[in-house]
Length: 392
Length: 114
Image 1 (cartoon, rainbow over the protein chains, first blue to last red):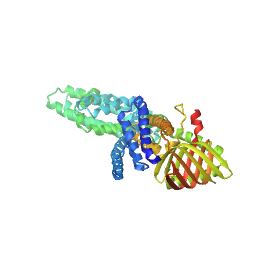
Image 2 (cartoon, helix red, strand yellow):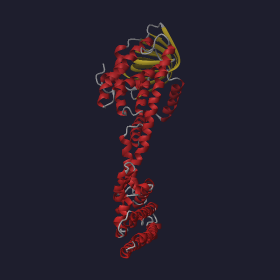
Image 3 (cartoon, helix red, strand yellow):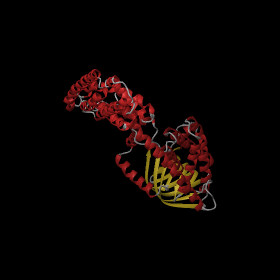
């Protein structure tokens, strides 16, 4: 019977297809295990359809066959779910990478790098902190850069600039006074609170800088309080009030005072300012868009890609055009509905084949078909030749 | 005999064998274990091999009768919807009845010529 012949024929087809694409798999660098997996899934799905008795199914009893089919599918479910989550995390993480790197302007990139590094190494933190020291004085110079974008902060920037001038001037004055007076420790202790408040005022728009300054000031206070205990000369603490001392002081106690928080604040601040500098994000989308598109297109994920959609649409539209070119729209829609009904009712009642001859005399049709696969009543048949006669 | 490796019909992809293969390939693509391009190569090979296998290895014959509901000939593809079909397998020893059967048939000459 032709139904009994289906199993071996399909088995040979599967084996031949698997063997013939093995080269393609190797050329694409796909592991052979995937090919075996493909074969197993193919056979399992075919067994689930129960269109015929297949050689890979246990023959004596149908129930074991179905059990084996469901078993293999159950085994495949975890495989599908696990990589799916991986893909998901990849896809969700990937946009953040470029976004971060994009949002940081060139000037701030070194700082960003230092901040990124800072969280992992423990003692090396001192270096990034010192690097940020020169970076902070440069921040006032960046105020004109971003303040035009944020017009509301224009006056704040002016005030900040003035405050900084005052600050540095008073700092220098304080240090000079301290040197001359010779009562360094107590004078510095008095001078520090002033410094801590002034830097706080200076970068008012930026909370991170404000905090950082305060932290630095606090660190200096600690350091300066420690210095007298160690018996340092009076002149040294006085000189430390100047710029270099900030770096020296910051390097010591800074890691102990919530640097991760500072990092976060700084990073958020830098990112926000970077967006503002680029016109409130108006100029970003071009870069973002190109990068975001390039990222997913390199990934062979199946869904949601603009290029895939476009290509498929193009192909489909061509096919549709071809169909429309010959058939009228009414015929198409009507018959398509019929076809869909047939497919829905049972995808079984279908014959796929080649035709040798299709003849019609009045309402009597006669067809000679060959090389066909017939699915009827849930069973599948293969035939080499079929002749059909029917009336319309 | 079909000579070229290309230009085989993909209509057999709509059969159970092709659907199961497509589903399996879709799963692997969804897992990103294979490229869609590779899956297309597999399907192309499938088109060729199933056509050749049906030509060479299948000897069964069958006849059927019924009433033709709709017919369509488009792009060298005949589509029939036949109702109340009776299939006679081989020498008529087995008959199969069906309310309606859809037949999709491509020209056999085109594959042989190309």
